[in-house]
Amino acid sequence: MIGTIYKCEICGEESENPVRWIVIQCSDTQLTVHKWTREAAAAPGARHYCGEAHAQVYIGRWFQTHCS
Ligand SMILES: [Zn+2]
Image 1 (cartoon, helix red, strand yellow):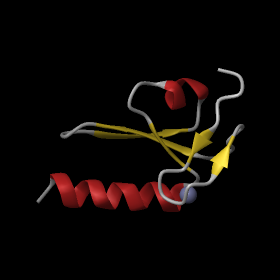
Image 2 (cartoon, helix red, strand yellow):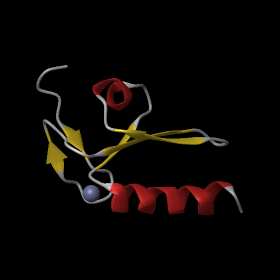
Image 3 (tube, protein in one colour):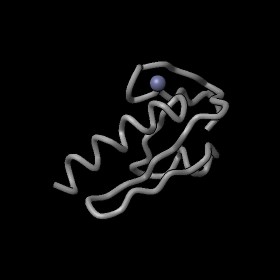
């Protein structure tokens, strides 16, 4: 996985070695927030965010989409 570039889904920031980024894995019924680990980040369907604020943006959208 060396050389993988991760991109924040909200602001588009890119990093090859993210620090304190957030990983979110979710389905229609469940959303899981992970501290950044290579394993979590590389999981199928994982979403990547440059920090808590942008993870919260996505969580807010998820609630609006799936809990209405
Ligand atoms: Zn961001």
